[in-house]
Amino acid sequence: MSQIIARQLRNAGVAAVFGVMGDGNMYWLAEYAALPGMRWCPAWHEAGAVGMADGYARAAGRDSVGVATVTMGPGLAQALAALTAAVRTRSPVLVITAEPDHVFPPNAQDIDQRSWATTAGARYRLVTEPADLSAALAETMACARSGQPAVLAVATSLMDREHDDGPASDAPPAISPAATDMTGLGSAVRLLAASRRPLVVLGRGAELSGAVPAVVEVGRRIGACFLTTVPAKGCLADARDPFDLGLAGTMAHPPARRLAGLADVVLVVGAALDTHNTFRGSFFGDARLIRIDIRPPAQMWHPAGDVIEITADAATAITQLAAQLPPHREPGLRNPETAELLAREPSRRAALAAAQSPDGLNPWAVIAAIDAAVSDRAHIVTGVGHFWYFAAPYLSARPGRTFQFGYGFGLIGQGLPLAIGAAVAAADAGANRPTVAIEGDGSFWMNPQELQSAVRFGANLLVIVLNNAAYGSEFHKLGIAGLDPAAGTFDRPADVVAVARALGADARRVATADELHAGLAAFAASGGVRVLDVGIARSVMSEAYQRMHLPPPADDN
Image (cartoon, rainbow, N blue to C red; front, side, top):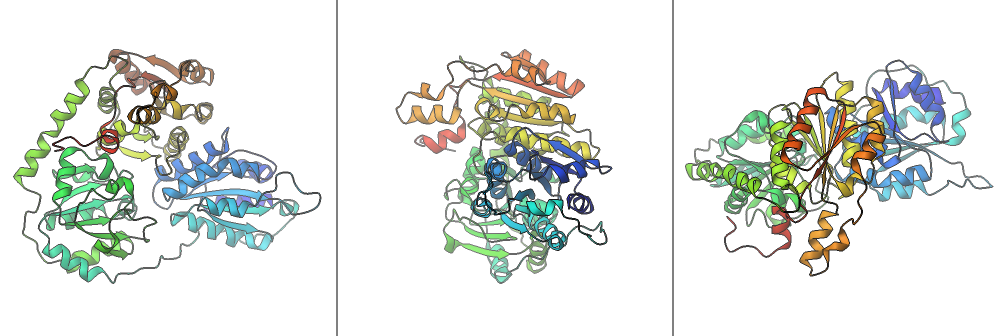
């Protein structure tokens, strides 16, 4: 049975498997690793393995599935936080495990795995008969491709049984078409045709469906400015539209916030209306919303009565909408006043970066330096924490540069595994593009051992640790609440550089702007696995935190 699992994964197009070996998976993993062209990528921790599979799938692109494997019981339990994060971001991830046979005496590793997996939001499929394996693999692969991570569990008693798996097939498993509901299309066309100040928001679904050029064409026809969600950052880079306002919601810059408040209709394509995209439901004011996505939203941060829902593939729905939309000659928000407002934004950002900080490097200045030095071909991965509110909005979206963010579940510690998986995907694709991970120190210390995995995999990876010797979010929130923020600091922080070097990475500490520039230049020149431990000021609060946690200023324009 172990050989059958290995061969069917190969036939399904799975070229890399990340995982931690144990009793529940070691035999088929050995068979898989022996197959020509198949890559077994052993991680040190189960959450790291699932994070790598997540990063691999997102970086590899449409129709790719990231496969991770863990052993039964404690292995799956250790992986559940990362699996939940993959569920929240609709990542195409498949986790393969075993399930103990329920015999007496009971297996010490036996848990109710189905309940654990479904609580995380994943699909759970148990195989108890050899003849069911092929269908189960096809089912769970298709489920993952559709955006719902899945767990495939094989009963341990099957591992020693022989079975003829039938003729091999190199075709990927078929994906059942999602249910569609286009009844709102006519209302959407009429609303957009009558709008005077429309906005268009693009999400990851628009990018994955290949709908971005068509969405841009529709937006220009109706006189709309554009916004993107955080997962879709960079999808408009090739369009080079002068009225691209950047990120929507929590991460939006002042001109984008002002213009969003003026909108009368907002067309949202391939995105959820979550708290980040809508800044807790207030970002789009009283605008009417039209939402096109392949599935209904899991949560809604906008008055439900103000949303026209079209459940369909983004490319299909936009094509039909464009065919019915009459010519729109109103300039909308694409006007000289908007252009002038946007023209002032670079100087405002430069002023933020120029400010001096007494307790370390200014985080805005650090991000500006990274943005200028990192290749336009780079894949940039950002973990989650206070630090990401500096990085995500102010790293430039340029043609060829791609992004990945690990904020979906608010799970710290996943930025590094995501980046390692992305770096493996780049290597498997034959692309010598660099991967850059931006992490906070609290987040980095969750999975530092995976640096050694990156070294073993031969990754071309730069890890930038924005180190303020604190949990930055908690530090600022405690201070805002009138409590001692020192409780959120590390009075004796561990040595990032020493640990990174011990794990095989090239590492250096950065305390000045010149040291930062030198470290970035060294990576650009030679690649490999490098770590920059950048001492940033913990006193500097991000703009997003100021808006979320402090009273608004008199003029927030």
